[in-house]
Image (cartoon, rainbow, N blue to C red; front, side):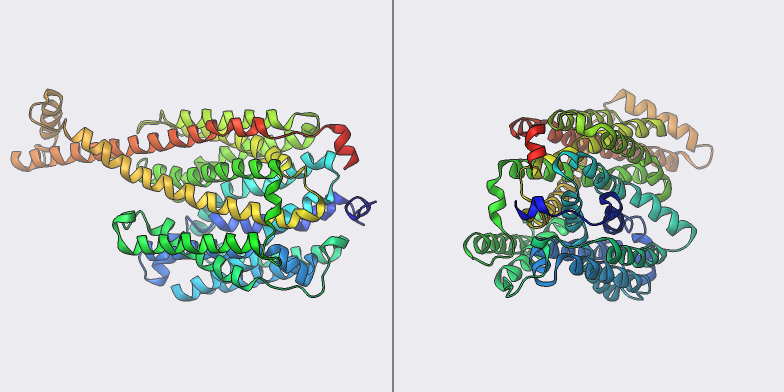
Length: 518
């Protein structure tokens, strides 16, 4: 009998999930909770909004660096010890973030927070999968879906409410008591299987780690700042891209050729894992991209404040939670591949519904597509995690989870960068088309100018009234150009979800008899 079939947790497997879910939830929540508080932090530190984005970027870079290193640190320290150490680092650095008095201090503490929190999600996924037998992994992933799907959705709402009613430091301070509870529960409930215990003579892949740091740092800077610098029209972007590609090639070359590499690339020989990871990368890109641009639309064009825009997106969380409960209840009786296909289809439908937005919509027009998107995200994300790992051995889970979450992080960063660029470029294209209609040869334009001029002439002279009328129409044209850009971008997100459906059809399912044997 193998180690993976012989080992079982001493405590109830559902109870053991509690510290894992709490810790992972804190990390994922902090990926988005700071977004709405960014203007307040920029004001506190007397920096521009553009400079303040380093508060977000530093966190993503640090967590991205630590994620693929999870398997190494688990061998070096033991998985339980490393998990608890990560929570402690994350908790203490959260307190330091709250008391930060300058931008450099905040960036440094966010880097430390990313180092501590980056391991929580892959470790949480690995531990949760291993606690349950194969035939019950649908329920375990439904529970994990509460973290993966719902936390980033409610992040802006929670952050907006805390920032509005208290102040921005409290979005970090709330992690402190929760972190201490997670540490205590982890010490009491978690234990290491034989293959996850501390190992002797563990060697670090120093060159691989060095290449990983430079690759992710250069790539994140390019993705975050590239659109503002006109991408490859800027010399520094070209050089940064060159170094990102160079260090990425070096990193993967080392991982494939070195014996004691940072990550084990053999996991990609598993077709289910490779295809399932690719589907998740696209989905993560769509999820984070939509979370980035929908608040921009609501605040920039519809006049919502940070809290109301987050509140308008809450139906997505309701839909996700409803589906998580549904899958957790009867998920083991359903076909996972069918669930993923249905979920991706719903994601596509919700994206196409958002393509019909206009500037006269009511909140319900935002709520319904978001609710459908929440259902689709949970319905597809939870089963695809199960399908991508169901053919792996338990001792492969930690390494596989680290690799998978690294690639999902990259997918989210690329997806956010793509939609940001699309909105910018599409807005210019729509503006170029619409401005041709603002001429004296267009009777509709002249009629509208005269109508607005008549309104303004009651307050000022005719020349000024004519100027104000044309200026108002120009602003309306800009609004419509931006509106068209958002619609086009939502369409791209919808198409991305539809085109990956064939990949799901290739993934192999697992029969109940095989599940019982595993």
